[in-house]
Length: 99
Image (cartoon, rainbow, N blue to C red):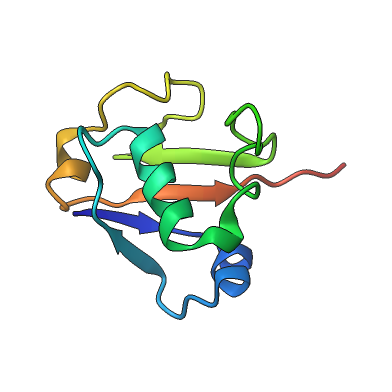
């Protein structure tokens, strides 16, 4: 079981009341398998975190775990053991922009 913490705008879109969702992931927990499980459970989120076609992270979305920015890591790299054990959440964060 993987704990995923979503930003407010994605929780609102998917009508999720809790700050975190718990996902069952098929295979080894990686960013790709977690996002696949998230989109399978909440189809309305398809295309909001990753591009529909390329499956690449959207520009203003960041991924964190265990106080590390995983946004530029390979989507197939294993997640930290603390995340796979459920001790720490996988964070999807809407980046701030402006000037």
